[in-house]
Image (cartoon, rainbow, N blue to C red; front, side, top):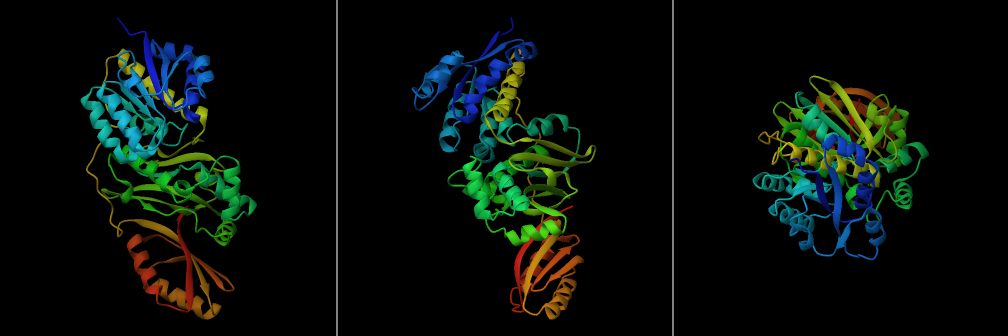
Length: 424
């Protein structure tokens, strides 16, 4: 006899947690038709019961203050973790998995740090552990990589996966705002936290690229393996110069395969205005994939927000309901696994944007040409703005770029202001 109801407990009723019961209610007929069963929230763990009492009454579930009220309840089939953070969430998820309950999470920090450990535990307990909402909110990119692109060889994943910084960079490019002005605007609209460190320093995006890399290449890396540069030091002058050259700045999470190794970075980069990612503006997210079979494809949508992220959470619940009905349990969300190998700097190829400040325009102009030639970095374009020189290069390895940067450190005739990657 088929099970008729999947009983769910939610940990946390914040922005996303409040959206989950709304989605389940709105799409109940469709969900029941697809899964053959009802999915219902029966309990929610909250700190302040009074604050969430109206929501619980509206959707007919019980509020509880203790995780034991959930993990020790034999009626509950699935625990949805939406409290955020790492250590407390890890403890709660492990307790749920050890109690043979399926788990859904939207916690990118946790998944990037302890995803492998929790996946292994879920498999041992013969339950599901899904986390579609952990990357790019409402964009179903993880399931796309693990299912729809499972027969394709992926070479590159580029992501605009942080809405806060994308909004700020849009303001800087389109309205001429400074970094400080763009941050204030993002905070006033609720896109940026009072402490924006994780967003503006690229940490949030890096966690997501860790997860995307595991799905794209089967390789499990850590945050320490990601080269991270945030947007704090991005100058308005560079934004304006990029615009004049038909480029826009985006905080790009880049995961690429070179030979058998991968290179993963998060940094501001110049994206040509003809590139699909250049038109991803404000708080929107997008993931651009290059693969052997399909070629180029892009997945676009809201990267955060109550209903978009809740929709991804509910999609995981639907997948678990189908697993339960067909008795297909304990299969990891991401089955693909290969030995982790990081690409050497000599293999990593990029085009570059260099911005120099010079003392004597003509003299240093030629000196720079000579130094680039000596380093075997071919110049695509060199623009002299009086005391400012911009150099756009053809492809060169990260190793060659590093040697070039060291070679100019002792030169007092000009000053390197910035260097960024270019995506055409």
